[in-house]
Length: 77
Image (cartoon, rainbow, N blue to C red):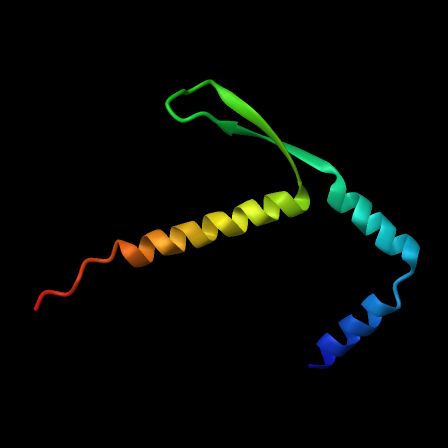
């Protein structure tokens, strides 16, 4: 609780320069190479912002969770 209050106080007192630097970092493109399925050597370069990478990771987690929930076999009875 105290940590949350302190964090909120620090964020609200941050200077515009710090906030602008954070926004600029969030807009910077991050490129990664992903291997192509079915090939041992071919890869594809994908560039996204940090927010986009985070969103893609969250979507993948949700997709896996959904697959796990729907793939459970019904109980015998």
